[in-house]
Length: 95
Image (tube, rainbow, N blue to C red; front, side):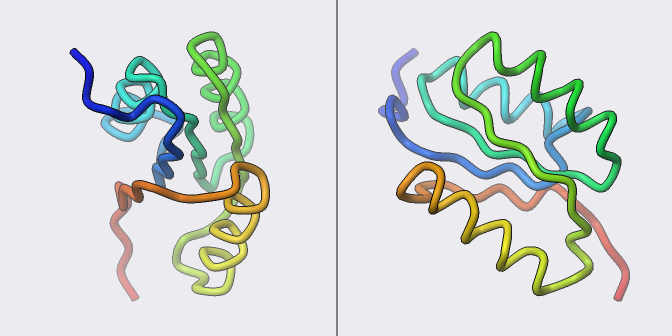
């Protein structure tokens, strides 16, 4: 299926496992570049290595409950890929 995502950049918060991982994988299979983040760096690194076999992946360990970390992550992704075309908030937090 061609969803017109080739060359686009997708961000998936909570992309190291479960639904987030599956979403990141689907974006990569459609030709998008993907940036993922999660709190647990080891799980995140493993996911990025696996997903990296499908396409270009950027990853960064961060805590989405810290607002500035989310802004910084967005800045890092934009600096790496030039743009952000899709953003998936696949996390749940209590503030």
